[in-house]
Amino acid sequence: MSLSQELIDAIEKENLVFLATSSDDVPNVVPVGFAKPLDAETILIVDNFMKKTRANLEKNPKAALVLRDASKAPYQIKGTVEIHTSGKVFEEAVDWATSVMSQLSPKAAIVFKVEEVYSVQPGPDAGERID
Ligand SMILES: Cc1cc2nc3c(=O)[nH]c(=O)nc-3n(C[C@H](O)[C@H](O)[C@H](O)COP(=O)(O)O)c2cc1C
Image 1 (cartoon, rainbow, N blue to C red):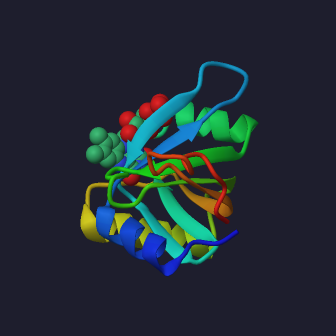
Image 2 (cartoon, helix red, strand yellow):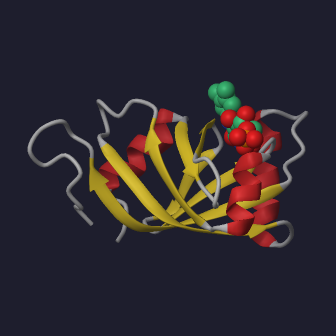
């Protein structure tokens, strides 16, 4: 239940993931640029503009993501998030986002704890859990 070094490198390099959330309503998916691994079990996501995503996560902290270029990194990552609006990890999110785009005013740090990794590689193993 952790990210391989290949996946850590891919998330850092890719710079865009698609983040899926749901509550009891229609599933929601959004592109997210501010997503980076903090370690092999944790991805930091910055909430700058989230609305449905944030509302879903407040109700149901389960989320899933894939990388923009899944042909290079064909993995689906599932986990549970914690939402931080103050403290060390929130400050880290603010420092990161504002160092890239000074006009941003992050609302929260979404700390995504990796629980499951699946392959989405087309073929017989598509959908198989790999970690
Ligand atoms: C290329 C791109 C990168 C984005 N990166 C972020 C991001 O890092 N953080 C964020 O809160 N919203 C980001 N957004 C905006 C979200 O995709 C989305 O518009 C926002 O969460 C509101 O949608 P929602 O109501 O479904 O949550 C990005 C949008 C695009 C097009």
